[in-house]
Length: 165
Image (cartoon, rainbow, N blue to C red; front, side, top):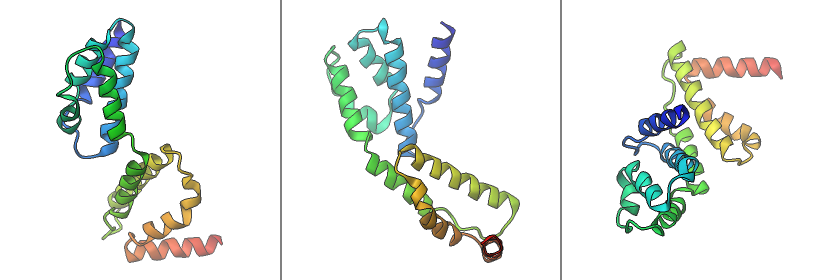
């Protein structure tokens, strides 16, 4: 029972207005589906649909809001949401765009470098989670990232790299 209450709290914390990132939206949808399915031994399809609708906002909600409240509609809602948001190509393109759109370092302070490295690691981890063989992308990613560095940091990186070669 405590696990169910904790899951409800976590689901409600993810419930907010999700427009900033498609990956955040998809993880929220997956969490909602997992929660509904784990609690689903006692819920019929109509109750599952009701819970699903109660945790969606904006575009995902608009996609299923006109489905009738019936037992058949839950599977239809899941299919509509899955068809719309489970597009690995679009998700991958979004992450690559984030990588390309990283703001360049204008000053090599520890806070700026830490933020740059953190953002880069998050994007790369997200791409790796899509199972796209990112280990072969290293030269391309290094080229993109070194162009984002300020001149002093880029020079230090090149010197360090040349010393290790």
